Image 1: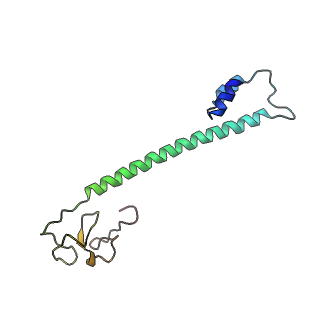
Image 2: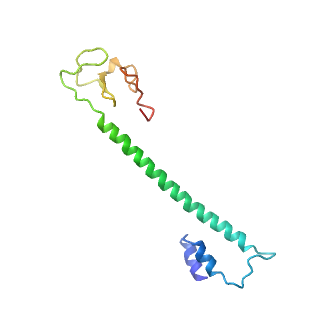
Length: 131
């Protein structure tokens, strides 16, 4: 039983190890003791924690992949602004200050864009977490 105590303190009880350590002459269920129900509850809790850990790990992996995908999309979206670049709304020359450059590559003066989260040319929204 020292083995069970060692594993219990580390939260690493293996259900099969525990079952194999129970002496064959033990009464698993008596009027005052229900070892079967205790073990079922313990194993259920153990498996639930293990399953939740796996689910959390997989969700974290999916979140990382989505973040990488979004980052790659943002890296692809760019616009080189030169002295010959014009505002897509008013068609005047862009200055290097007070402009918006949207992830879809459109660029315009801030005064020409009523909403900084919506491209005034395509009406595409960029504040909703997806494009």
